[in-house]
Image (tube, rainbow, N blue to C red; front, side, top):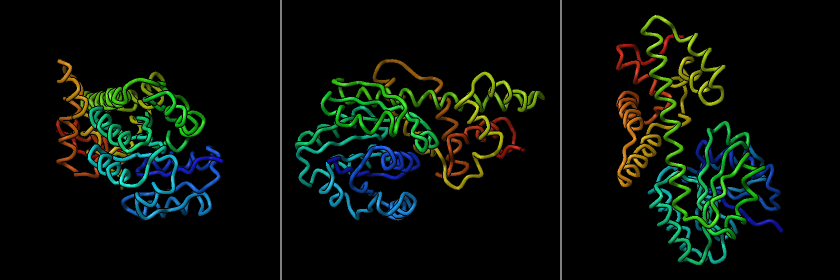
Length: 307
């Protein structure tokens, strides 16, 4: 009999990950869904099918019924609060799998809480955009005791993910360190694209030719972000794909890790400066691709690109 699974946190990534668990993991019970804003659980329940998922009203209810608890929440404080609530139930023998992007010190703290309650823990942040989550093409990073990682693995490669980075028997926090450093590559990519397109426009070259080179030489995420910038997607969408506050949280974690290690991440500092300008200009609805708008403003252009 397949384990009963609870999913906590239905952001852009979580919804796609749940879809793939339902469709590919071979569950014999409905996937339990909990989100602080219950409407998101209801909407996903309607989308995936009432027999495939079930909405629970509280973390306590879900944890009491689940063997495996996935967590995919937005920040450190939210993860800590959810875990503190979860371990009020009897969790002995259960497995917690945290897919959130948080500071490695927070990961270790959360793991300690889970282990003290008699459960197992795997740190399992993922790389990929929401479209990759929807398509089951994420890259999972799994750290913790090998036996616990092996319990989590059936939900990753071939289900939610196309590949795994196996960090079995490594400290939990190493997975979060890798994820935080990896996310700086996304920030640096967006920053470079923004600066390049603004220079292309200001110099008279125009953005079309640069985009053509990017699409042919740096396909994949580079081309996708370039398209989002030039099409105006970064200011037109109602809900950000990668919200400015989350991007700044990741940047803070990276700069904190660098300072603790006796080094600096100058590119991240520049990106964070433009994220701060983005937040000031459009507020919490800003998307990381809106760095393009912030760089445009800095160069004397309109925030919105001309299509």
